[in-house]
Length: 158
Image (cartoon, rainbow, N blue to C red; front, side, top):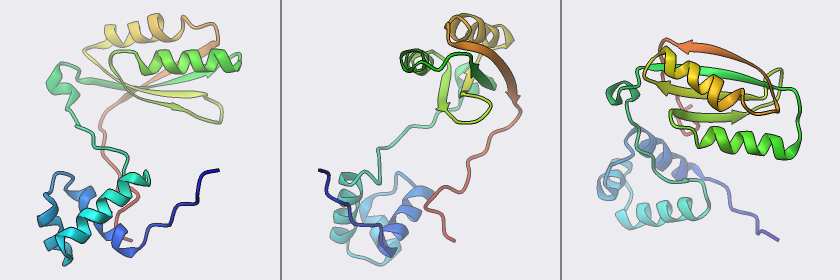
C-alpha cells in the first residue's frame, strides 16, 4: 500500500510559482527571492521531487528553428477500442518523429496528436503512414496551429 503523501503547502506553492517563471534559477537566488534560507529551499525542492510534484525538467525547443515550422493537431477517432489496439497506437504515436505530445482523451475523439513538421507533405505522411495504418483508427481530422502560447500553469498566483 502506498502511503498518503502530504499536501503542498503555501511555501511549496511559492517555490513552484517562482520556479515555473524561471526554471533555471540557482537555489541561492531562488531562496533569496523568497526570503528563505537556501537550505530550506533545497530541502523543499528535494521533497517536491521525491513526492512527484516536480517531475523533471524539460528543454523547450523551437520547432521552426529546427526546420519544422508547421504545427498541427491531429484528431484521431477509433473504430475499435481494444486495449491492445489502443496501447499499440499510443506507443506508436509517442515514438513517431515530429510528434510533440499525444493525448488519449474521452469524447468524440480518442486521441489528439500535436506535431511539428517541415511542410504539408510531411504532415500528410504522418497521417497516412503513421496513424491511419493502424486497424483501430476509423478517422482523422487535421487542424493547423497558427500560434501557440503556454498557459498560466497550475502553480500560478491566484
